[in-house]
Length: 328
Figure 1: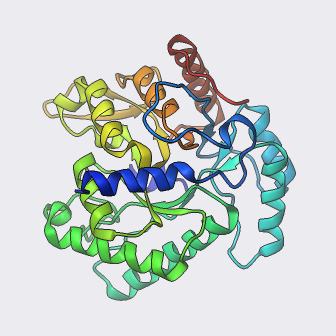
Figure 2: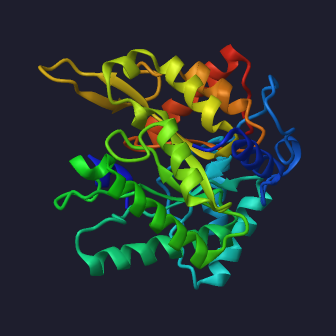
């Protein structure tokens, strides 16, 4: 299911340990210059893997599906429609992407882990647990979901308790249950940052990381989702730098999309094609390229292949202007 349709602190020592551990890992599918990156804060700009949330092509044939990504200059993909128990199909997809030096970025499981219905909540927890197990089988960077919502009418809608201690504590409990059930060796479980639910800031993400206290938990970054005020909208450069300074070494994957402000009598930010909004992608790409780990740049929420390709082309131009290169 298209997620767009669904959505219409650590001590310094602990942070350093997490950064070193993550930087020491290798992409299970990566080859060449991206396979090992030097750990620690660096001014070196590493080549990035650009990916796409949806290829808009059938995934019945793993080889054709992976080739489509390569033909469009994408070197990261989200997981195809495959079930955890379909081992042969999983192997076929892994072989197809490895042959082309493509990686699996994410297994998305967009369900409400805080559903008011206890039976539904348990079902959703199992859905995400299975998603993390699939991510680990595929060698994906992460399985990602939002932390959830107490909103009873929309699975990810706003609610005053979405930034409460009760919400925080339940988010910690859920993440621990999911990670402990799977014990992932390669993939991380991550919460996507949201503007109206924890984690909504870099600091709240740091508090979650410390409280969850599991090596199987990583950071999924989405700068556009963090923009929830005029100050952040007009100062995305500062927002990006602050976020990377605090979370950079723990980022496993990042969503890329742009935002524009539509004038109304109240604040209304709208997602748009990259390059048609106000996010500072020069800084965003530069900070991604400085990470020691191979964290893919995933374009999302576009309307069809043509919009995705326009976003790709714009990022290639911005990358060239700031000295950031891409695989493919």
